[in-house]
Amino acid sequence: MSLTQHIMSLTKHITSLTKHITSLTKHIMSLTKHIMSLTKHIMSRTKHIMSLTKHIMSHTKHIRSLTKHIISVTKHIMSLTKHIMPPTKHIMSLTKHIMSLTKHITSLTKHIMSLTKHITSLTKHIMSLTIHIMTLTKHSMSPTKHITSLTKHIL
Image (cartoon, rainbow, N blue to C red):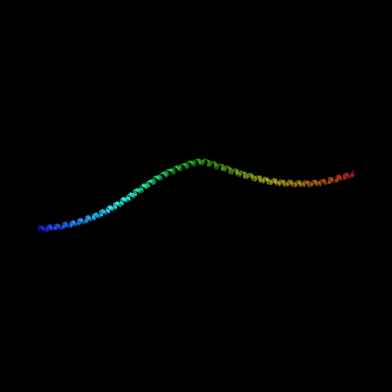
């Protein structure tokens, strides 16, 4: 093989390699453009995520503040409950006493009703006896009248 042929062969290889390099370079350029586009998209999404994160942080602070307020209110309610318990216990005790008194009053009322019935019955008996005595008195007066009348005639 002559030097010229060898140079020609090398030139063909170099040309072929150059075409491959050019093709690869174009492919790399296309990939680079795609990567750039993806990078822009990622950046946009990252900005959106950052904005959402800030929003979430703001809400988290608000929630923390509300939680502290709820805890404070709960403690206040607990304190009020502690103050309310003694009067409530006292009211319960008074209610029990009132219930007991009510039972006693009911029992006394029943006894009074029973006594009233007995008094009514006794009053009826007294009335009956009074009527009987009056009848007897009338009958006893009749002979006395007769004697008085006879005495007048005799005199």
